Length: 428
Image 1 (tube, rainbow, N blue to C red):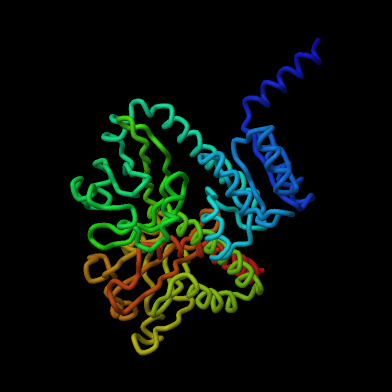
Image 2: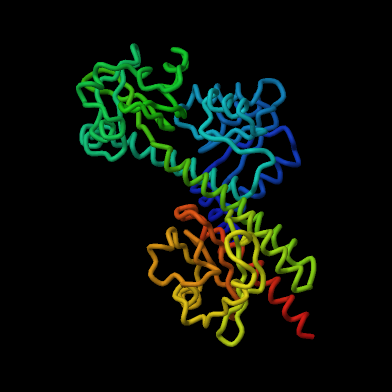
């Protein structure tokens, strides 16, 4: 009785779970990916060739498909085209060696997105979830086509109605007018190719009317913007037209660029930690610290202040030659609380950007710093204890950007760790 109930539960879970078709000729890789996807709650069907994948797609219609670019028999791209022809809304992820050529071939074949080989488990999980979410969104939109007038006019996403026989734009909603900068009347005198920033063949344009594709569209002001166009047929007044939903990808591009920058920054921090901890000599750590920080934020000069009983002193400096003297640097021994930038960083435990020191009333009046037109600084904290400050200075105002404090904070962690270790070693 309990066994039967357990099987019924498993059966119901399988029905509710998304079904994925995985077409990969590498058995070991396919098994690994299948196990990862099953851990995410998906039901996975495997195929090792294009023919087997098509048969499986007919017998077990998938919710999404993952295709390796190299398959025995027909290529992965040919399989993608065949599956797309039968199901224009089917999410398809191509697994490929990342290059401009392979990415272009994948999208030309009708792929929804791609996964760079070797496939990252995190990227795999998120891409599959994303394309399935997009597919569910499309299904919901399709189910509401009978109310298309309301959704077309009031929807925040730019939408175009296109005559598939001529690729002429029949109508545009207000959001499309806002995005492109054209009036509704102007749109009706245009064709889809008039929006293309890069010329596409006519057969490519007609094929794109029933699928998902990425391109660049030209706005009325001449700017080019990356967009993804999701399109499909709709019935309007007895005529079959194409409803194209334009998704502005410029924000996504910025997010992806920021994500890449974060990955690169993390890698840089790990490398810096290794460099800074090669020696426990305080002199070596200070010297390397001032060199290594240049990989994060470029500056004319850098000053490392150490803190002892509430007072700061210059422990190391570089780039000050010709701007101030060594004697002036050594004479700069302020009480931390008496210098507004140092006091603020101590209290807030954050980096401080001063784009123009002349506009900051709390900038110290001292020969060591008087030449500086801009500063970005960070406190060096180890387990909550203030060890000192790292100040980066530039003669010209406006040289530092809003990203520099973030990068400097990332560097401060390995810098403080190395500095603490050197101080502990020196105290023994």
